Length: 154
Image (tube, rainbow, N blue to C red):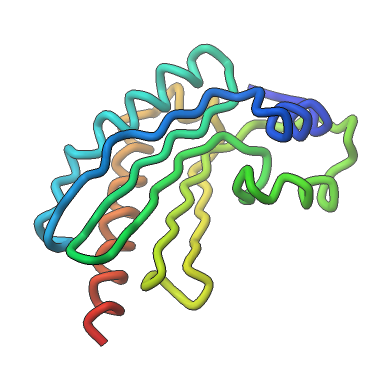
């Protein structure tokens, strides 16, 4: 899926995208977190990118006392929707570019910034290979939960 940079910025700034926050997943540890818990997260994302909408799905997790927020978004660069004003530093407004799938992980104990953004290819690739990309996303989330747990223990 392609989108003009100016159109992307306008949609995000005017809340012209699909957004949903799912119920909190509670777990005591990274080891206890069951990756199947992310099925609703992926389903909600997938059904809305198939409608060719910009999408933001949030999945809060409470792991012990650690609050974690997973955000799966469509974007045009590895920046969260919250940083859309910086997008035009990388593109001209009339440029047309592929939409990408970004996973944003926010947690105090993740790293010094409390934020990590990883891109997982284009939306078109996600539509074709969702099972493979969902597994990569799941592995990424499990790795981040382990890091958070390790940092919290320090």
